[in-house]
Image (tube, rainbow, N blue to C red; front, side, top):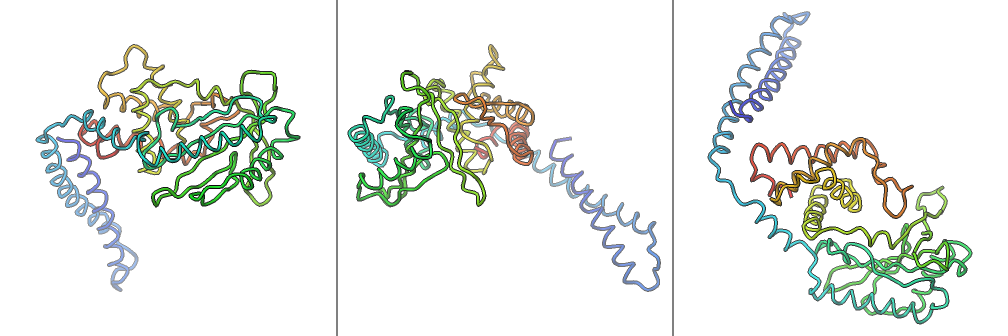
Length: 351
């Protein structure tokens, strides 16, 4: 007996059985001659409903199992590869070219006007740089390291940079300059859509160091919360290297995350991919679809209990999230795996 036949028979029996039993109780309550409720009649009605529901469910499930058995398997890996090409950021696109030119102009302006305050080279970071950005959802992140003597605090630093951009940078496409949790966002209108450049200032812990180890300002947006700071090492983020195939997997997972509203950060997805490859060393499947199933299985098996920290700050526990969100992530992964095992073609629909 096929999987759907059994599953639908069980579900149909439960639903119809409970429904029929409840209807019988209501019928007895409304009948003045039935007082109190005759539970033997309720059980009998529930049994009849269960038999009817199980039969109907089994019939529907059998049809689905039959269709599944006769369905021709498609080359899911080829389809997923084509999907990747469609959703991955095209760095030759006119919008990305325009935004890159604006980012370069901002870097040039900061270098020219604030050279004495800088403690290391300004660098671009993030998914647009490492090739894992989505075409419909990308921005450009710029890390700006100030030397440790330039400002009395990280809050003084980020507010200074905000005022500097407000007063010194002018662009006809600029819609808004806004303070964010750890950065300053510049929102642009390009070809009718909004795109963003994020400026991430950090106060270096040691201006004599060649490494960009320092502190980010953390703005607390809650009513009674206090602003704070957090340690980071921007250079370490650039040291996280993914292979071309791993980048392809990450882009696919980021698209899945966006489409299904999965409560997991892109940074955590990246580290989970690397962790899955490490855990499955010497037994990594060659097929792209099977690689994805390996990643989904790894996330499902580890998301509930593993402690994964950010590379640039080990105090930043990326898996520190609510149980509700962890269960949602696990359930979404399990659903893909279950449906894939039943019908391999289904993975195309889920991602």
